[in-house]
Length: 427
Image (cartoon, rainbow, N blue to C red; front, top):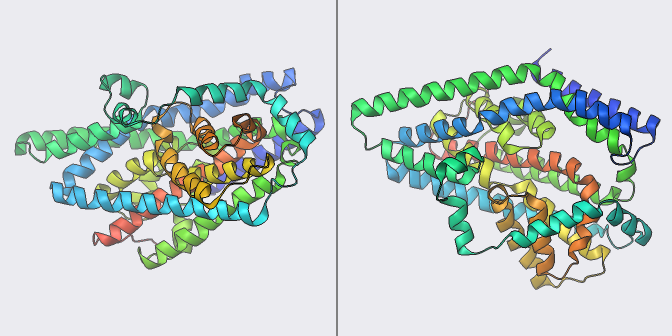
């Protein structure tokens, strides 16, 4: 049995086991002491070993792959051309994702008939978490200085330790650019050192993936056992529409780009990157998935390391298609729940802010939820409403991470084709 098949089987078994336990115990949320003890002392540690192995080598892998990728491009003109094309793809794809998601909410109006009693119940259940999210949103100041702090911190070592990926990317880009100006002897030794670091990171990924079939079911078991289907009932249409948005963007928009710009068969592409999709879905983290993404892109799609090493680390930080789609849909859904009618201008503002905040998600502590609160406040939606969707956020996070990561690989395939290094998939 192939590794990705084992992981997928483990994912399904973990979900089924969790749902069965949830139905037997009849719990909703973290309210059963025995279940919480089992999750905290058995399943979570096993899942975390897998995640920590991936997280621990993200920074060295990003630094080595990006610096080597830039150095191998050879000159600043190549770096600038590929960089502008990559960012252009990211912005266009993210904007399209928001528009698709918001169109689904406007078309089906899932918040119009939302039960007021269930609304109050959900907000009370997640009251503490709601307060924390709102407090985090108050700490965020979106200014030009915020961007400077996100990209150029005073203490770069602290940025590396805290896994602040934007500064890591900036330093790696600068290092790669400066390597092109090194003396040939120093350049050769630098490349060998970075290649060794890159190879070490890949070997750690291979080791982590061997335990993935056992760790992945442990990761998803806790979610399914705590919530089961109960939390999906009042939010069923909203959740279904969000996942519909994910599927449309992944299998329609990405497929069109693959066929027209990358000259790649979409079916063959998705088959080749299956392990990336499964890892992204189960870990809910673009950074944790990045080592697998780079390895699969280079090995299965035959995209050169200089392209993959440049596009993929950058994409893991700033290309958040699924996150932007989710943010736009959530703001419109909660606006409907509270009866806030948004004008066309306000909806356009939501599109712009969802794109910008999705790009900034990785650089600002607290993830996407505090940023959604900022978007809600900008169009007059009560920020306390974020509590309504907190219960399903973890499930939706799995889907949006998969969309984000897939978008990175699609962009790499398109850039490779534009650079005359088209992807090649073994059939």
